[in-house]
Length: 378
Ligand SMILES: Cc1ncc(COP(=O)(O)O)c(C=O)c1O
Image (cartoon, rainbow, N blue to C red; front, side, top):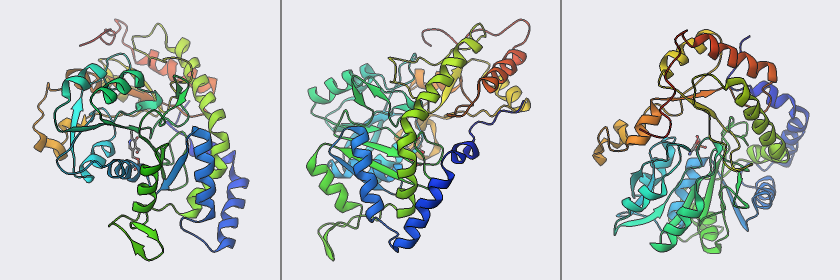
């Protein structure tokens, strides 16, 4: 059985008629950029997150850039983030004129290690930018303490964690601002590009709302040079169709992860750490083995869709060579990058498909077996 990594067809079959009606509504309205659909989606998304303000933008990278600029981060500032993330996280810091400083990650969760964050704080540090990677919320209690102790801004990259809930709060609502991507494959995705900044801070909200639309305070009055980060109405209308399904789709992802557990147990893989219930919404289901490359090749040959998120940590990317990090600078991040493999994961994955993935993994393991991914560290 072939098992695709994601299946957009099955996702959109569930909402197709509603989606076409929403597109017709936009077409008939004659308003195509940042209009009533965008405003309605902002209200609905803010309510779903439990925050005062949601500012819709053109993509997740724009949301991160806007959040940093609106929070006052700029040239000469350092922002502590992680290297085990999509490059957009670091790019947003660079776009703001600041310097990314990479903290290592925790081996069990593969997320920002608060102890290393504290070691990386300098006189120039102005913000911490944790990433709720793979759909799992970071240790926001510890990171919140550090942010308060050193008076740092806390801006969350929640681009992979729509709806994840920890400490009774939604991902994206712990700090000064939270940023989301609506890239089509995300837990909440659109049929193009989109993003959102959420905040309870009135000043950040006002600045971000103006900056995303060329720094306009009112029509034809530009108080600061800004950007064109507006959301198209078709995207907002599509997202309004999708948003009411998010909770159910996240539950299905959690259920798929719960099926993977017993199906893969006994095989020489390290499975994702689920955390408290609801704190991991499985944007990606990432297993680990030292034999990652062999497993990846064999699963691909067996028709199982697999991927690596991400094979080269950002501190070792050519784009950031000027920062001077070397191999070995972030030992846990680098160790993890060599082990991770993302298995098929989406809300419509069936139990039969999960069993087919597990059977393909079992066939890929040589008779002598592999060493388990180093338990507990590097
Ligand atoms: C962790 C993370 N940060 C930032 C982004 C950037 O979002 P976008 O592609 O919408 O610009 C993404 C998504 O691609 C992401 O996964």
